Length: 207
Image 1 (cartoon, helix red, strand yellow):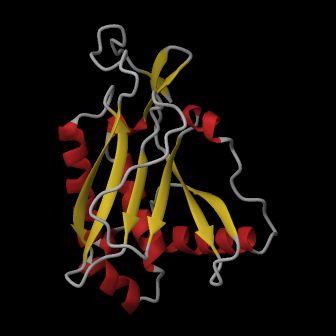
Image 2 (spheres, rainbow, N blue to C red; image 1 turned 120 degrees about the vertical axis):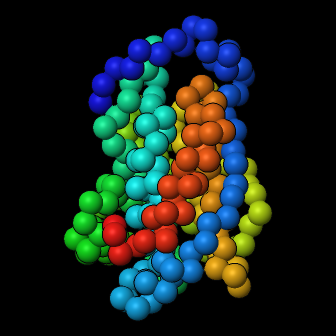
């Protein structure tokens, strides 16, 4: 990570009680879904890979305030809930950004299995400590084609983004909700995120 020359004192959102806000938009996942089925990939993991790489494409998503200093991580990992097929075991898993999807996929599948079977503990960092780590929380709600959503707030001044995606509809349009902090992320940066995410979902074979 590196320190960023950023004027926190005069930022208009620093003194807000809560400077966090959310935006939801639909992404066309038809090509990605077909790619996952043709190659026997989990669509959940393929979507996670696309969204992690989209997040890492935006510098502002990787910024945090630590000990009063603005820092920017070189990259951020994803932390996501996982569950077994019977939906009776819930854990969290940490995964990196994707440079080679095939290798990443195999590693993540093994990690998921080890966590769900109890061979590994999984990710356990306390919620109030997560703003200091190079992570972003991801969550999938595959049973609901939602229009928008809100998120639980541990700290109204937290910086760490949250990304949630849902069930795609009959037109293969999938809602993605992103919660960010306005200190660093404005509407244009959110637009860049959705634009980049769409490009990645359109070309999953390039992951």
